[in-house]
Length: 67
Image (cartoon, rainbow, N blue to C red; front, side, top):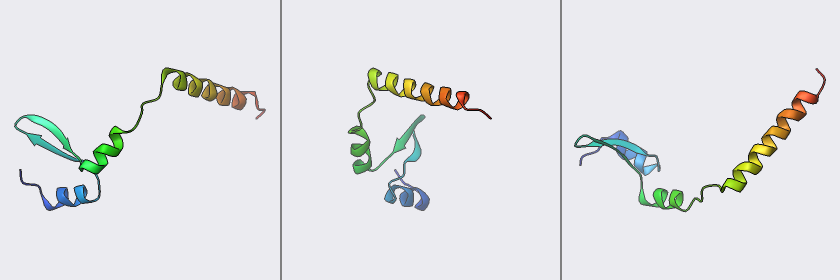
């Protein structure tokens, strides 16, 4: 696979590069960037609920303040 100079530069910066292999759209990323992202743990359902409650509280506080 041949990459353009712009694609190579993006990879050097750790940015993803969109490519097409055959008819399949793919994204190239450096291995170290991929591994860092793979270690990310998605939030649990409980964490999402807590964030939603906190956001609702903030919105309610804004609605309760006089203009």
